[in-house]
Amino acid sequence: MRENKYDDEQFFGAYSRFARSVHGLSAAGEWYELKKLFPDFNNKRVLDIGCGYGWHCRYAAEQGAAYVLGSDISEKMLTVAKEKNASAIIKYKKMAMEDMDFEAGSFDVAISSLAMHYTPDFSLICRKLYKCLSDGGNFVFSCEHPIFTASGSQDWVYDADGGISHWPVDHYFISGRRDTIFLGEKVVKYHRTITDYVCALLEAGFMLNSLVEPMPEQSMLDEDADMLKEMRRPMMLLISAKKV
Image 1 (cartoon, rainbow, N blue to C red):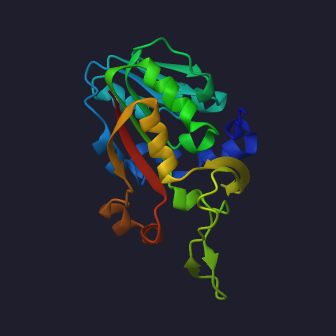
Image 2 (image 1 turned 180 degrees about the vertical axis):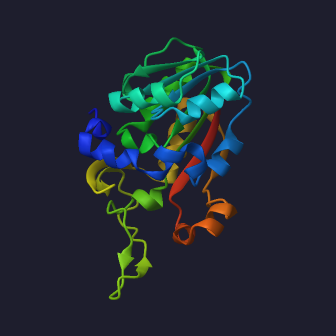
């Protein structure tokens, strides 16, 4: 299965107006914590899976990476990446993450931002990455938190007055496809538990370095009152692992 909602004209139009699409990493609530998990990029070969607009590719390049490959299934995403985040050391490639088939030891670092909840087979991705990473290589990624993905609705439950009552969590232990609404459009995502994520990494041979449920940076909470609702439930999960 190769889902690619991002090349849909209407959906991509809505995504292009998304805050993180316009302002980049500074508008990403999890960025403050995610960047702490990254290893030293200096002189490293970096793979960005589901690179989107290429913001993380650019960051790796600015931190001294020797080579960065940004891969994404969306032609529209890659077109913007080449416009907004071009660099002599960054290359972009259209590719579904399930189709990765790089030679052993091709990269020193693999990163991914909010893409892993789009694959039905995270274990496959872990095995492919373990193969293409050098010994001691790092895999750092963010995904939607299992509490966020569990019920599939991905919206709050509201009270009679239209205020937020609570976040629904249901069918948590039933991993698999979820038909969600994102940016007003139907989008297919895949729910898995925290155990699923961690065990897939361990079974592939990785060692777990860190697991973080990020809160928005204090400055974002101070500047945007609407951001306070993000303190009521985790939206993101960040994981750092190492090839051993």
